[in-house]
Amino acid sequence: MREKKIETARAYRWFCDLDTRWMDNDVYGHVNNVAYYSYFDTAANRYLIERGGLDIAKSEVIGVVVESQCMYHTPIAYPEKIRAGVRVDKLGNRSVTYGIAVFRAGSDDAVANGHFVHVFVDRTTRRPAAIPERIRSALAAIAT
Image (cartoon, rainbow, N blue to C red; front, top):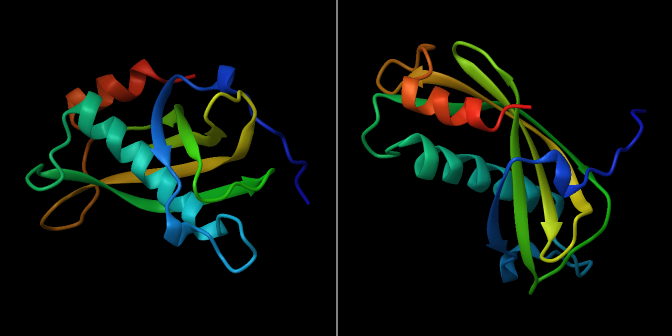
């Protein structure tokens, strides 16, 4: 089993504020594990939209998730203010691996962290495509 490493905010280059949602809680009274993948997806795509100019409805090249992983450290629950930290761990010609973590608002210790891989594809054919230059520049800006 891999050793758990609790990431801190210093390891991330960009942040966005999020809220837990009522539907995120499970019967055990904390955010269910699947919700963290939604937070990861939201953070990565918000970055691509805000900084990379991705138009989720019209861009000819889009990113699709091919891999994700999450390690959980401390439970959170609805209602809580949270923030996601994003960085680029690996930037290829057609793919990007993000490091992403979720933090309680006001805390620098991750409640969960992991990675998320986008492969960029042609919207119509779904065949791999080069990362558009504006998106590539935005990704390079948060690379570690």
